[in-house]
Image (cartoon, rainbow, N blue to C red):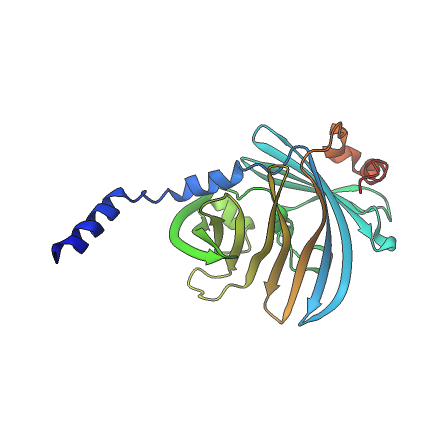
Length: 268
């Protein structure tokens, strides 16, 4: 009878599903259903300790075409910044960002990749933090094991810039993404300035998730940086599908009129 527990353990191990590769985990997340074309509205709170210092309301719409995703972000509040917008283009070979400021010369500016990690509106979120997909081109991916976040089991995937191009523009020596094991959702991310660092310089944690019309969306995200400040995104509205959304919204040259066009849609 003493051999029975060992036998059962051996059977369990032989029958256990093998761990997926890091690339498979990331690909499962990148191919998840997130709506197309979709819309959401969020509130962005900037915090110092427990105190909210500034708040913004941002609407964004997105469209996936093949392996590319284009996302338009439009600032709704405060009133003096209303209409400020930018277009984030995610493609297999990389990312592009175009910014339009209503004040001044109303030009469309191309943001350089070296600025993609700068804080948006003074927050702890950078352009890269608001992508729909985890980048793989130019990165070495490694599966680190499992971690439990938000009551779910997640795969920890390390991403290290592996090409000269990605190393030249990346602010982080390595990042660790936590992707749900059962459902392909991103539950958190840790970003490290040096490869040997044990404590992340910036940490993202998803604190709420919902599946709406078959599409996953975060309902609350907190980004924490060193210095005692943090930023919180809270969901205020979401649609997995927006019929007849004008494709011209997702072109850089139409950014000067994109905010007005989006406001005319009368989305809730």
